[in-house]
Length: 188
Image 1 (cartoon, one colour):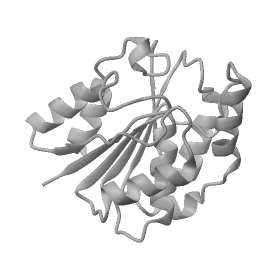
Image 2 (image 1 turned 60 degrees about the vertical axis):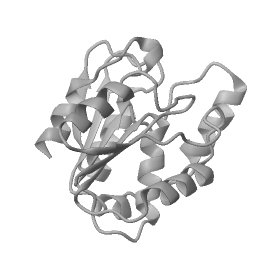
Image 3 (image 1 turned 120 degrees about the horizontal axis):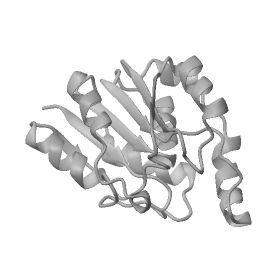
Image 4 (image 1 turned 120 degrees about the vertical axis):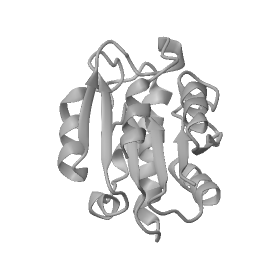
């Protein structure tokens, strides 16, 4: 059975925004879908998120796919970096980032800086999935297109998709369905 792990973002939760819709849509098509609640979501820490993924995912192969939102994308990449497993069938990153715009509070900037300054070995990651997709919004208030698009395209060979007016693809942005992700998984 094909399995999909949906990893929410910073401040997110399993029932947020488009996650319930995507989970239900994939389950109707015969996928097993897991949407874990990541630890301390309002103060995400790299080690805790990687540990959580190691416990939840375990071993994986080409029948396993990862979908991440925002910081959840980084958690997936960091998990893959240290994984000893075979290749995943694919990784779909929604609003992924290596660098963010300046955030609202000093605390937010401090949290983001830990993730921004901790390097990812993209060469290791690139060999852990058959394909990578990076989906951005043309009006994301958090994730600048410049720099992030180039990083994911050049370092992972990711196919870049730019959606219009989806902001940060969050539940607060009114995004309750995200057909582009379902379409990609169907094609994988």
